[in-house]
Image 1 (tube, helix red, strand yellow):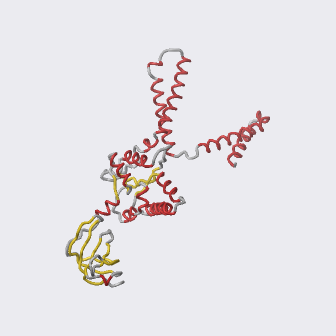
Image 2: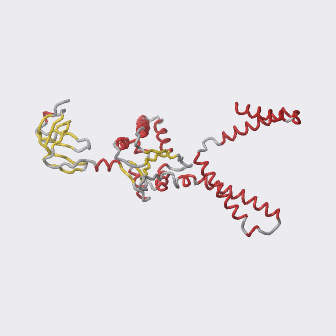
Image 3: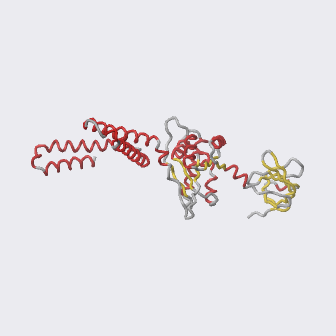
Length: 328
């Protein structure tokens, strides 16, 4: 309203400064109000029009103008009726600028992904780019990995992934709501890591477009790796020739190798199959069977590994009781 009133006041001042227009002061105020209202209407129509859209629009206009200029300066329009040539040139500029604008806006993702995420270090080596999906954020382990500074590079989180987390977090289902909120908490943890280069890709899903398809497109456009814990998403990325990072595979790779003679600490939680046995679990899920330790169930003990046997669920370490671990 203030802007509309300012426009009306400016129109009245212009009319007031010219004596010949004194009789049209009311009309000038009306024109000022209409101009202000028109600007506000344009602003409402452009709601949600981002800077990336503006850059694509500018690029499209420039390409359209360049094509129209080159055609209008060609020998095709050197001779002929001047009025016809003028109309043809006018039509060329209008049509080419329109087509350039439309094509640029439709492909604004490709246009904005030509240069953006290439970051050069003094040795002129490209820093790796990793696109993160919803499952990796909900999993949460990525935050701990980044806090330990083991993951180097740029993390790219598309805006539609954040919107999906908000949508899951607002679900009426308690389990889905907890997952969505966990993903948002992970995102906030990532943002608080000062050493991490994290970027939000302002990319939205087109009509009837799936988030998996958009993630594949972004990763291919940026020549980035895809970080996911979703098996189907990983297979889709593999089909498209993308390098994908699986946190579950990383967790398995970080499991310490157990050999005979190793001493480990484990909390015993239940009795084993054989008499006198007690069972505990390591942090990676490996089962530890301790001989002659049934009376220590519920306590943390030290045990010496005697043998390691692979199993369908991981591995089983058979060990002998050594001593109790004193409570801190």
